[in-house]
Length: 449
Image (cartoon, rainbow, N blue to C red; front, side, top):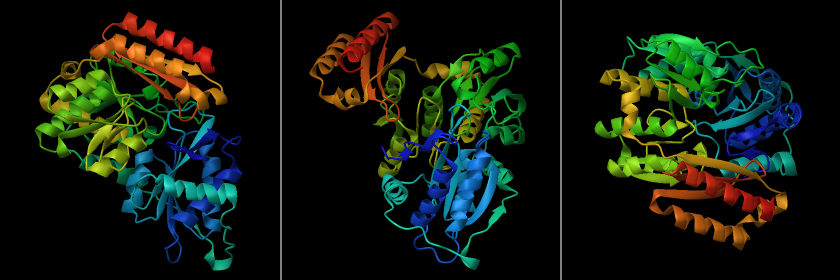
């Protein structure tokens, strides 16, 4: 874990942890690292989500970039995958997305994409951190005609929508769908995109005011969409997070269809059309046991990566896989996108449902979801360091694993961003896994809390 960059960019409370000064310096340092071999003015894109602080950080980031000679192209409010796509289409040297994804509005973040459309590797992020935190290199003092300029891309949203539409041959004619935009980036794209595909769209949380992003809506708060789909007799619903790189769905009965179910449906469709490389799906160690069993039962190879879409992507690139994702709804169709794309995922999922002339509630029965319990234990900084070497905790975890046997599992891991140990249990018996999860969490709290 980097000093500035976590698993998904630099993130913190805007104007407190993620300050104007820090954003300016990230722009300066990143331009230096990303464009070392570029002649003339490097071209850098900036996109942003709808939160109040995004305008402030956009200005600071653009100023930092221009001060070291980079030309900035402002995309305006767009989903994160828009930046990843357009950085290649517009032949840019790098792309920045200002967003804190599914976090509350007071947070914000900066994600960086290279000229290939992929998020930066750890080594490059560490080099940027070294310039900012250790003064390992001096910022160049550019003056006169060497300074960068700022322009705006007027067609960014339309270019992205046209591309997503081009990735599928399925139409959505006749479908009535609910769309929860989380008052985030998809508010500017979703209705136009899915209408273009032929769907009758019924919109929720698509009126951002800078403060209401992710506020009891979107993919982290599915209750409104569940109720809306059921009460209005819609075919299904889809929900995105603040920057629209993840998607969850709601079936015709108002039941949640999470990322594992979405992956199962899409993986089987890809496999049946011989479009699944190595007949494999990349998930994470947190993927539901029901999903891993589904893969085994259907002759698919399940590959487990560390938690985080960047690690799923790393595994895919390393071994030539083209499909993967997370339970949270980050799904990567590597044939079409270099990052998780909620709206691309939704367009393919809805296309499968409509092509089959079936209900999502029926299609989703291809997988059984194992009950899952997650308990977060707050621990001290010292306790977090000592967790791995505590023999009493290790013995408890081994004992629980033995008790669960083949019908369940326990996964205990350190949070990468918070002072927490996460205790996750799965199994067929909800009461049993709840009791064992709480017992394990209590012990961890006693030992290192």
